[in-house]
Length: 241
Image (cartoon, rainbow, N blue to C red):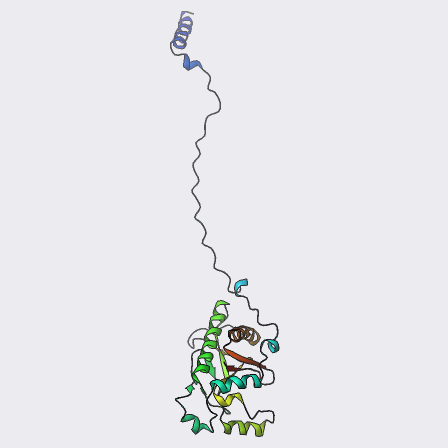
């Protein structure tokens, strides 16, 4: 009994000397939150090759987009072209006026049986720019690279006479006589690929034609050329301006 009384007296003394010990704790214990590590921002994904910015639109109508007749092109051909050459020997002697266009990384020239691979410098630059712009357009649209194919270039008077014997619709006063005019076919293209690498994926000729039509429309709108959409010959007939 004496021990109990002693403990009670001791506790009372401690409470009297240190009153804060007996005060109840107010509120809940605080919780220390560990701050979250900020997320690393994601690198934005590059746009799809066929995103709306680089879609293929083509032209509403080939005939309406490229309506320039031979009569219209003939005016420009006479303005910028050379005097019509008589034959191939005459063309060879006119190299100061004409540029050879038989080989180029941006376009392919078909074997020519009724024309000669020469153009006036102004037309040669136009053809080079068309081939390069076609490459650029294919690249940004994610389409394997192809070269356009040139099917007709400078014609001598002898070439035109032979054509008229085989084809009564061939015009005697052709724009091709002046070295200002060339034909690019729209139903055939040359695939650009590494001969030692994997084959390129196939691309429809219609797809390539749509892309080419966009390039040619831009060239015509920049007033760099006249263009006629030839249905029977399967080509775009162009004269520099």
